[in-house]
Length: 383
Image (cartoon, rainbow, N blue to C red; front, side, top):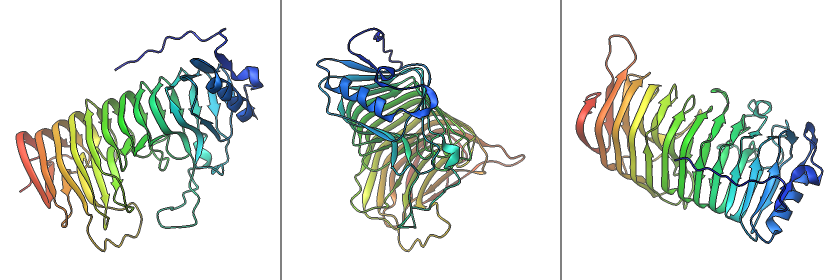
């Protein structure tokens, strides 16, 4: 799906150009105050308004662009916003859009997170209570009726985009890129959000191309070019008490190449109870993917994991339909579900995944999973 924003913004009195508020596009001057001032005027305007970031390199420190606004606001990003090189920034996000109904972020420009300064600062926040996390590049918090289109995100220090507590957003025709060895640079992470549609986007990162966290419901993902990275993941889930369920996930017509995983559902063990249901992966092409199809209910990315107990995340009604391509690991289908909450109603229909190794065939493994098989099955169904 391609949405085209056609508003002509130059020379109109509802356009607030950051340069008119003192922004200097030299790549060095801190333009945070100018950006916030332009945003405030647009947000207060008695009609639809535009914040224009023209061609040029604008350095910006962490900012929150906050609503509610009187009418719809468009941010036209034609230039490059450049983050400070400080690896931590004393902030959880570099740029945050918060509490806005009718936000559009659009243009041919880029968010440059200057991530290389931060990638060596890997604090293990999963096991260190006093750690300080690297900042997300761009966060969308409590946005309703949002559109993010055409822009590029480069070299985030941590995640590129986060979608949290949002309802009805379209992300379309984006380019998201960071080196394959850059840690935790997820492309798009969604949590506690509904009716999110992500399409026609190229994502090359050092972690999940797209990750869906707790509370993700009615999420549509299609036309994604993913790789390198860790594939498209649901999870991780079950790490905290009170996590919301995940349901209504549709991932279709995507191409995943040279990734650590292909299509993945991951939950912690032990975990509090929650659920994942009504998930469809369909029409996916894999090229040289590790773990092309994987359900991992003993997920832990850390060096030491106790696994003193089972995951209690109930996974049910998950379909893998018309999944084809090649695997860099012999184990191409790996369904390791929970003993305490076995997977239910898992369907594999039309699977054609070949192992890249010479003279060997791909294999499958199922544990604690009720699985039905339809159509072609390469590798052969697990017993």
